[in-house]
Image (cartoon, rainbow, N blue to C red):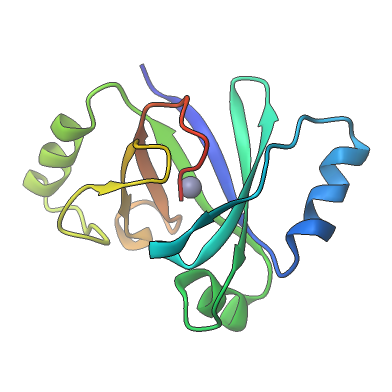
Length: 137
Ligand code: ZN
């Protein structure tokens, strides 16, 4: 079943960004380093969904360049699916513009891929499987 797994937000300073959610009393997870994406990430639990705070570890990273161009803010919407390989194949078949040619594996062992904003109404969409994983970029 589909649901919003998380909203990815690009921030300059994780500590500062997480303090907002802590003030609200929301559960904030530990900081995780995702080396292949060059980010440090924190997940904030929001009911069934989560908010993913992403701080670049390099200005050359995807998140670093995003902040450079557009400032901090909403970076992507992540949808959870039950069969990511089927969805990936369907999207490719339908000619959707995907950010990568293959599924990627996140820090928690879950799978994900990104759909380019030009194929998704101007929003970068992450499709992911396994909502229990700690980090999904
Ligand atoms: Zn994400």
